[in-house]
Figure 1 (cartoon, rainbow, N blue to C red):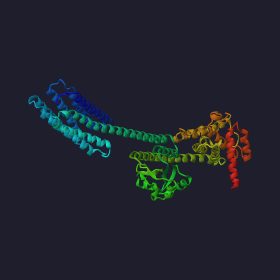
Figure 2: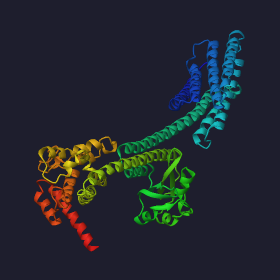
Figure 3: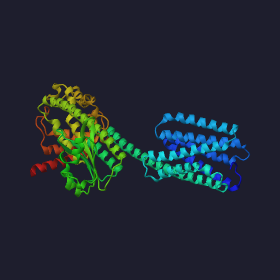
Figure 4: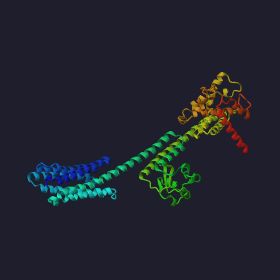
Length: 579
C-alpha cells in the first residue's frame, strides 16, 4: 500500500495520526511542567511519528518516490530523537553524536536507494526495523530506569512503547496482506493510545504531586515567616516560643507540644512553652533530667528523633504518654551553630508517619528558633548588665540622701502591685517596674545642695529639680531596648505630670499621660508622704497619706489609679495581719 486508496483506510490512517499527535502534545505538556530533556526529545520524536501518518493522509497525488523519501526521513528523524532520549535515560549523552551520524547515513542511504536504485521496499524495511527496535528499547529502558516501577502509568508507557515497536517490526511481514493494512494502522493508533493514556496519567499525577509540593512549600514559608516576624517584633522569649508552637500545631496538625530549654549546667531541661496537655501532666514535665527521655535523646544526638509508637517505648514519662493517648512523638533539637539549646516535642494521638517535607520544615524551624533563642538570651543578658549598671547609679543618687534611701525600690513595689490590681499585661507591669526603679535617676544631675536643702527651694532651684525627669530620659536614651513598644522612658518623663494638667515637664492631663506614669505618680507621692524629707522632718501616717490621695484624686492623681492603689494596699495589709 503506497497511497490511501479507500475510505476505511483513510480513516484508519487519520486516526493513527490524531492519536500520535495527542501523544506528542501530552509529552510536550509533561516537558513544560518539569523541563526534563528526555521528554523534549520524545516530544520531537512523536511529532515526526505523527507526521509520518499525516504524510499517508495527504500523499495522494505525490510521486511514489517522493512519498517514500518523506515518510522514511520522518521515521529516521523519529528514531534519532528516540535514540537521544535513550542516551539521556542511560546518562550517556556523548553517544548522541553517533545517533546523528547514524541517522544522516541512513537518510542518505534511503534517498540514494530510492532515487537511483528505485528500491523503496528495502529502504522502508530497514527504516521500519530500526524505528521498531528503538521503540522497544525505549520501553524497556524507561521501565528499567523509572524510580517507581509499581505505578500503573509507568507500566502503560513502557507497554505502549514496546507494542508500537513490535508492530513496526512486523510491518514487513503484514504489509502485503491488503485486508490487514487498515487494521494495522488501527492497531498502531490503539498502541499509541495506550502510550498516550499512560503519559496523561503520569502528567496528571505529576501535577497533583507538584500542587501538593507547592502547598507544602507555601505552608513551610508561612511557618518560617511567622517565626521570623515574631522574632523581629517580640521582645519576650515566651511569646516567641508560644507563637512557634501554635504555628507548628496548625501546619502539622499535632495534638500537643512542648518546648524545653537546657539549664545552665546542661544536665536537665526546663519547660518554657506547652499546648494540649492536662495540668497534672504539665506539673510533672516542668523540669526533668535528660536520661531516658525522648527530648534527651534528641539533644544528645543533635538530630530529629521520631517515635511512631510512643506508648510501647520505654520512657521516664511512659505513664503520662499513655494517659494523654499519644502515639507519635517527634523531638526536634533547637540549634544555634554547633550548640544545642533545647528541644521542641510534638505529639499526635494518631499513628503518624512524617513526610520528608515535614522533617525538613521541622529542621528549619529548629535551626531558626535555636538562633533566635540564642540571640534573645544574649540580648536579655546585656539588658540585665545595662540595667544593673543604671540601678547602681540610682543607688548612688539615693545614697547621697538618707531620707530617700530605698525610695525607688518602694515606689517600684507600690507601682507593680497597683498595676496588677488593674490587671495590666505582664509586659506592661515589667515596664512599670523598671521605670519606677529608674524614675529619679535624673537627680544625679541635680546639685546636692539643692537635693539636701532643708528649707524652701527658690524658684531657680525648683526649676533645676523639675529637670530631673528629662535628665533621666537623656541618660537612658542610648539603651535601644527601652525604645519601640517599650514605654519605660515615657513613664519616667511623665511621672510628675498631674491629672489636672498642672504638672511638669509638659503639662499633660488625664489620658494624655500614659497609664504607667499615672500609676507611678501615685506610688511616688504615697512613699514620699510616708517618708521623712529634708523639707519635712516628720512623715505622714499611713492614714493621713491615704486621705491625701483621696483628697487629690481627680486633681493631682487619676481617681481610678488611686482606687486600685488603695485596694492593693488594703490587701497587702490584710495579708500581713493574717500572717
